[in-house]
Length: 214
Length: 164
Image (cartoon, rainbow over all chains, first blue to last red; front, side, top):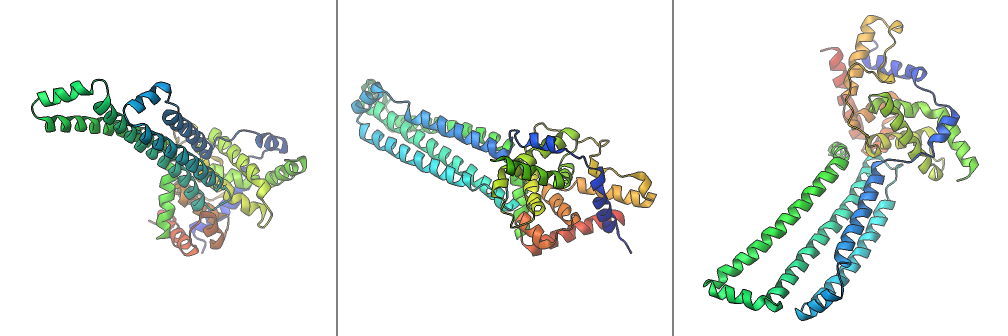
């Protein structure tokens, strides 16, 4: 008895005749067209992220800020941060390059997806690292300005005048934490959207394959 | 890349282009998208070709690149509305060749396949292309046992559609 599946298989084999046929010339032209694969997208977005965060952290620096840092006694700390920044940037670029090179379209579907997600993870880690550095720097500058800045004396006076000094400082620290949390949340939301659009299907398919592994 | 390599590649692609067309029909639902995906697969094949050492048959190697491109690399340029009245080549059924019952059965099965997820489609595709489970497992990166289990589930599903 032939069942439906045999029928399907037979029909499938016959499909060959109905499929479009491209000529040698048409195919030849095609191999020189530009790819618009998702790996390319990930690559460009990653490069933009590296450049953006590196510029933000490393180049927002001039003579004035140097003098200010010395005045606020945070010069040493800031220098250490900058060195860490450079070392980590080099490390991440190396990791990115290494992982990116491992993306092979000839791998199995599961391995290919894993490689792409790994590249994305490297870049995400770099972004989180930068957010951490950003928060530490912000804390450092606030500390410097409150303790050694021009208005620090007035601020501290205002605090003691207000009567409850502890409460005042709790409020300052609380406000700072809220501001930082809001910034981080915004960045997080942005990345969720960006990579959500780009990687939704890939993630779903990867989950599907992983489910088959159990 | 030299002329000889180009020529060899395009000739092989020309001979085996059916595989790519079938993948495109399975994963897209209109002519433009079909063309788009075909082009992307061709580009990916060509980029990977210098590393193709001929350990496997050109066609075997092609299945992998074509499916990977369709499932993972290809980004639909626009959100396309799948229209029910448009049938891509692969789902078209020639009426004169079959008796009405068979035609109805094929229609039901093709509709069911079209509704499957990306991974399930790949499994069905490789099954219809008469690949064995060891090849299927290597192409998708899952174990042979799991490929078999999953495929059996899909087959049962398709059979239930025919005999509810």
